[in-house]
Image 1 (cartoon, rainbow, N blue to C red):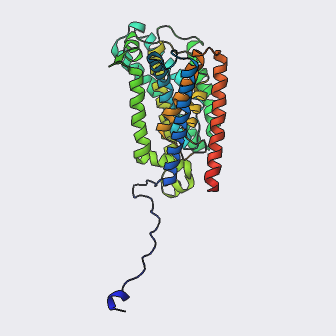
Image 2: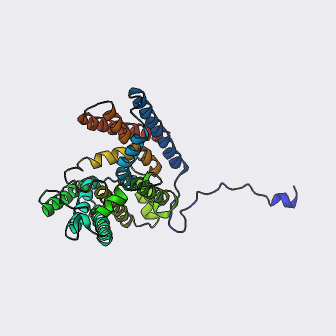
Length: 353
């Protein structure tokens, strides 16, 4: 054997890649693939629903008007769903989003009532937007702090937050929607305005979706969010402050609930204090349908987009074929249970594999 050949040694197996120097944890490829599979089967369900209602009500469903209305009606829930995606990926939950939306809308609406009402100028509109965003983000961060530092389960914290936020809103208004809660400028622009035929509500929801989709899939913040849901112990060992991150995630959820309040005021001109009791059901249904696991560690904003449109199409389709409104809530509830059941089956399959 030559001297050169004596120096040749078998190649050692490549070590597992350590966490990146910036603290980012690598997300396993199977986790990425799982999200893609979830998006695929959810999209198939959406297409099947569209096909069913189109056949059941030929010429009445999936018209240009229907598509526009579905997109507008889904825009607020899409914004809320984006925030809920981050929360559920961390293995958390937020039941308070409807009440936080109401509290933010009431806070902004009361300011508008005392500073011009329906005829308020753009400065008042801008202040109202800031108030709604600040109230939502502050409430969400507060709930996140209780979850992170008090070690109280998110289900309990946000259930308490649901009642507290709604109670404060009712105390501030006497349980009545304040007259003149929205300015005409806000309604005529964001509420009813269009750009190239596309409603501003839809454009705003699309921008929010794109921004936070990129935040989840292409940034350290998104990677840490996924990692916390997968293995919070490993994340702590990597030096990532889990508690601080959870406060940010719940604050983000609150911020988007505040934005949802602005969109609601723009669309309907009122706070609708009694009209948001099922927002959490609708949003959680959409997020879980989109493939985000209730056990944490897996999910995507793209899946949530598809998931949001399933209840929207389902509700519109049932209206078109003449089904009573009460059955619509039953259908959404059944879809949620079915989605959770399928999620559990997929989880058990992955664990066996």
